[in-house]
Length: 168
Image 1 (cartoon, rainbow, N blue to C red):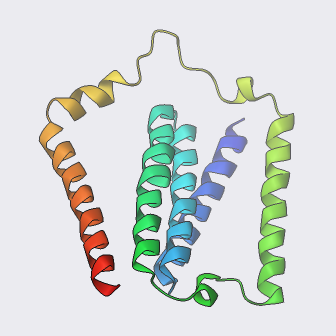
Image 2 (image 1 turned 120 degrees about the horizontal axis):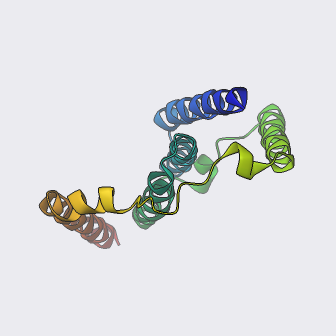
Image 3 (image 1 turned 180 degrees about the horizontal axis):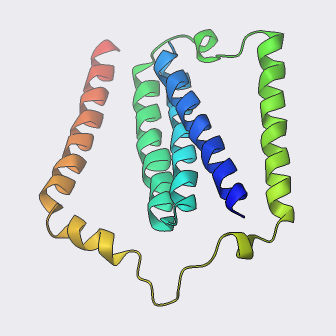
């Protein structure tokens, strides 16, 4: 059981690092955003494996979901690049490598599905409250920072709309 956790921890750690490096090296902002989503999913898996399920789910919902949708919306609104530049995979070799990586991930899911997951990942005790230790400081001590961040995101979206309208 220890080998299971260690293997997948290092595997998803390497996937997160490789996705982050690929995110930084992309020329297309849309392709970079998709690699960032892959990095966020890998980090969420690491959080879940470290027994921080709430943080893992929030990582997927907030960062990989909402923030990336807003980012892609702004990128599409600004109309950066041509459709031919969006695709990173252009050759047959790269498509074969991507297909092999996809099959490897499906094989991992099949192996995990055969295992008895309740024994491998123990459920938290029923009395454990995983939301309160995170929500209490967020809405008490860090409320101002939380609200300022939301206002800054709103201002960035409004600025992108204004810039896009000016070009038309």
